[in-house]
Length: 153
Length: 153
DNA sequence: GTAAAAGTTGACGTTGACGTCAAGGGCAAG
DNA sequence: CTTGCCCTTGACGTCAACGTCAACTTTTAC
Image (cartoon, rainbow over all chains, first blue to last red; front, side, top):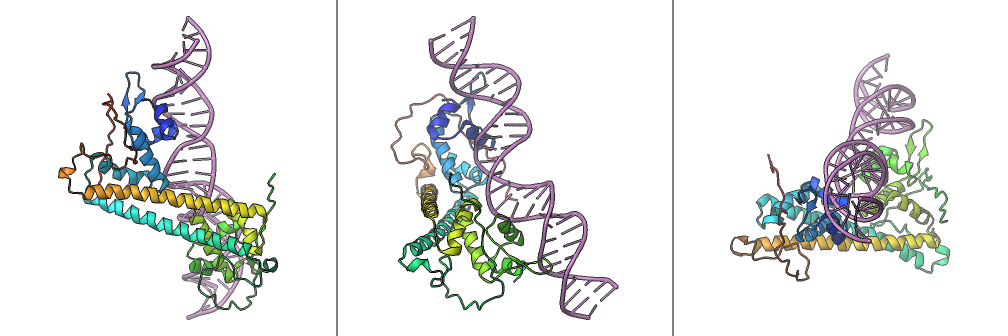
């Protein structure tokens, strides 16, 4: 299979495939004229690479994992690396959940039938849960944002 | 409060705060000599901004959300935006979970007591679950990666 | 044979959230 | 007065995963 076939089946650009090869993540045989030739398994490999990229692993790290992926045999350092990345991913999921909750709180408050969303009645929807010790009227309250023009033309 | 205080309390750099202001996400009053003065609420605001950045929202989008955050009153477009970003976050969490599962499968297989991790016996640990229709010996199997030197000096 | 489609290397461009100097001003302590 | 710390604006650097264009060769379709 040539590069375009792999690209289509894996859903990436040919540029990405050449980049992966450049980074040492992917290797290809060459036809007599110099074109890259891949086995079908390359499609799965590329999908794995994509998955790891999506999870935020940089190519450097993915490269470290490759020896295990290829041989099924890993050094202790590789295992530590996998465990560390697993932890990073779990932490990232928690961060995402927290941000989603913040958005949810904003949305929920917007949907509550409080009369005209009176801002004086609510806590800021983005405040964390500690009870916000009375921020006695401080002299500087000039924290507003200018929303320019939305222009949803 | 001056910029250094906010930076410490919110756990970001002063450069970041000036960047937020530059992007319209944060406003400050100025002292007679031109120094930025913030109310205490700025700390919470910066933490929210950071949370949204961490969740992958670009400053452009955060800027769109600011009118609601400030006034508690949102246009329909802002609600759509919040819903869309909520969906993006949920999708990102699913991607992370999938990548973590892939890592888990790799780790699990490594810990199984198969004799010498014989690569001929196993499916690639990173293969998805469809049963991989017999990839009849294709002529090109040159998909190996060079791991350079690890050099954990 | 001829044109279109696909592949090659090389090299520069992009994007976003800052990091990092550079050069200078303001202000309390000693 | 000087030392030291914090502040200011301005501007260039960074890093990663590609996008994109150029100039050219190979393969494919008719």
